Image (cartoon, rainbow over all chains, first blue to last red):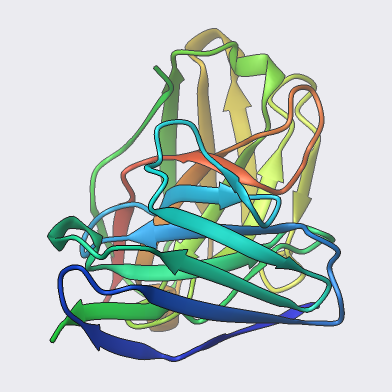
Amino acid sequence: DIEMTQSPASLSASVGDRVTITCRATPAINNYVAWFQQKPGKAPKSLIYAASTLESGVPSKFSGSGSGTDFTLTISSLQPEDFATYYCQQYYTYPPTFGPGTTVDIK
Amino acid sequence: QVQLVQSGAEVKRPGASVKVSCKASGYIFNRHAIHWVRQAPGQRLEWMGWINAGNGDTKYSQKFQDRVTISRDTSASTAYMELTSLRSEDTAVYFCARDWGWSYTSYYFDDWGQGTLVTVSS
């Protein structure tokens, strides 16, 4: 199975901060990575697929980049509704696998 | 808009089985696969398997191969996930998710159900 790792495991940030989360895949997965946001007690919400394509309705403050093994999710200006856990997922090959998540909380 | 509505929380004894439903609306049910993903407390999301809603073909994670059955009722636009021989480690929230692919399985999940908590306890 493809292993997905994320860093950091958690981070504290302030409203208005720029935040970057990193995801690494082993082995390489081209650009077949998605990012999800999950709030406590809720279902994951898709933000980005194909490493950098925003899902419909997702604000442009979210952006993704990367290819191969290293990927990033960036939130350009953190807002109160963005405090959540973020997961990357590879869909390059069966079985699909997820990263362990990065929790973004309020500093 | 796409909606996936799951059945309610369940409490089961070890060794029992549970069947969770996922009713789809807002799109052509037969055109998109449905996946099941679970999340144990404090753990990452874990993929369990999928069903081709059109022809009923299934594929399961090796971890759950012997204990999980995914089915669907096209007349009700509903998918089901049954997990047998439950143990305490199966306590988790179970999600259904729609595959983004149109008439093929991409393994990218663009819409999710609200989740169903299954608690296994004696």
